[in-house]
Image 1 (tube, rainbow, N blue to C red):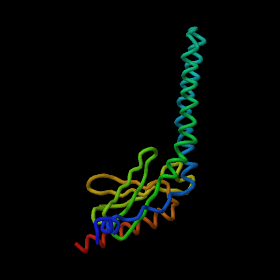
Image 2 (image 1 turned 60 degrees about the horizontal axis):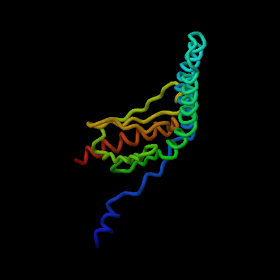
Image 3 (image 1 turned 180 degrees about the vertical axis):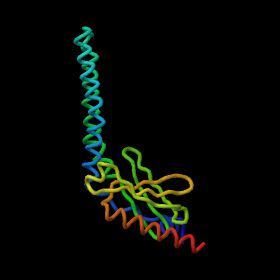
Image 4 (image 1 turned 30 degrees about the vertical axis):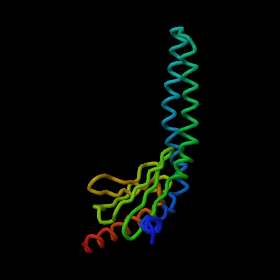
Amino acid sequence: MDDEDSFKIACPEEAENRISNKALTVWKISGLISCSITWIISIAVLVLTIIFDWTYWVFGALIIISIIQSYLAIFLIPSVKWKRWRYEVRNTEIDIQSGIFVIKRTLIPMIRVQHVETKQGPLLRKYDLASVEISTAATLHVIPALDLAEADELRHYISRMASVEEEDV
């Protein structure tokens, strides 16, 4: 057996599970909310430009920035983010893949899991979604926007597997 074969055996396959399609809607609404702040500031600058007779290029530049930000936050980033998000829960580890431009892949050994919880904000609750938060001694890992039933099932499964791993030690 050469080095390439041993690497292929040791390196697990990529995570295959996707988060819910409804995550796109939630992320687009979040982007819309954040963009509305920029648009309110743009309108305020327009009013101040008219009142104080400022040059209009400042308002024009702000409008261009607002349009670009709106496109990125509402359309582009949510769809790319959804396409990149993957997770896989195995008997001995949790594999999380995320990122927009830089893809980050995290392997969490089950033996390191301290506790698991589900979390819902107002938008996630409206769409029957929940995020699964996995706590280790080092940090908190999140699998966002899963269907509520899937999130609960995943929380119980990870909790059960983590306690089995601790008993084996």
